[in-house]
Image (cartoon, rainbow, N blue to C red; front, side):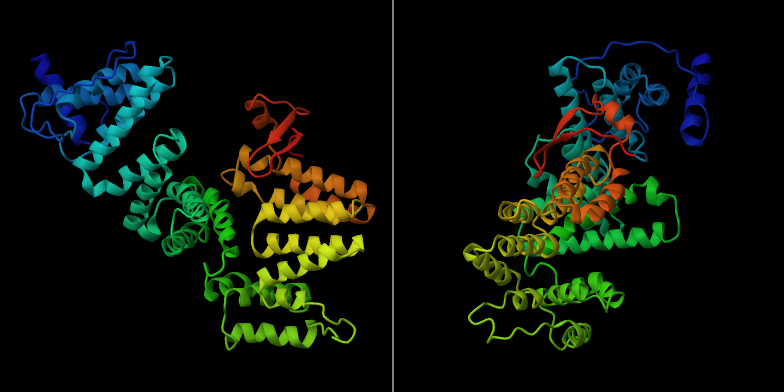
Length: 485
């Protein structure tokens, strides 16, 4: 009678949400060996307990493992979970969480496991569970593929080729579209940009999925950020906002990647708010021309009118015979010709101040227009070689570093914040060699000091303030550990 009563309670626990299962005796079980010979009592990988002779036993073990898992007693949870999963991996066919729970259990066991062979076995089982969950619950394909891709990218990187991970994320984005989950966007963006720049992904494919990423961020912004919905942060969209747009912005320097509409949507409002600032007018005009906007485009026509009336500089060919009109190339958005033009002038220039100015102009084109930071630094350093007591090249290099949070990390957190250290180093150097830029340098230092890692983050990384630290990524500079102020 006691057994029948207990099993009745278990049945109710599974059918009534919120019921508390019978308390299991807490036991400590040594982490088991991975079972390579899972016994299935029915054909196929998706056996259910419904109507089976072992249904009562499976129900009991199901409830007990979930209780132990909730308490993070992973070894004990494994003992019960293994018993029910071996016989009825698909539970009653109405719930799939024995697969995702199994992943949680294996990850819990990995936290304390020391044996490398066992650890490798657990990891393999995790990915087997994702595949089997997908097989048995195809309606949840996007979930299983996204979890598998996420773990391949972040938790256990290097197990497969990046292209395989990219394909998994791509499948998810195809399935979910503008409702793609936040945790998919950043790794997918990273793989897309890197794959395109490494010529492993065709431009047409990258363009298509960039559009999908932008659409998903816009949808989340409308649904959550614009309405002050807590899900904006709880789901991780604030982290996405700090990373994906900056990575996708890198592709603006790839000619033909973004169309005229993209550049107008992103930059025209800047022109509208700064019509009297000729630097802004020239920059926006160059960008719209770079995007191959039609001369008859109304917005480009407005920018051209302002440029012609207030900002166009006429170069007298009589006083400048034979000198290429580098500035015209730049303002017309012909950046490759502008760079070649300025470099030709710099290479033959004997006046070091002018030589430095030409090199710095090239650096600014690479930074502001083409988003190629390494090339920008190269020419900023050439400017320093030509004019060592000039602070502006150091100011620019500092900006390059400060803008690299999304290139060298996830956009937030320690790996993204440490770029502020070499950035501030450059701004301090700028004012030390050139007092005329001190005010500009100090403003930037004050602005970015608050973005340095916190004391707690530094401590967690087993560092202390004053330590020497090398920032990796494309920066590759040795700096000093400092905490946010």
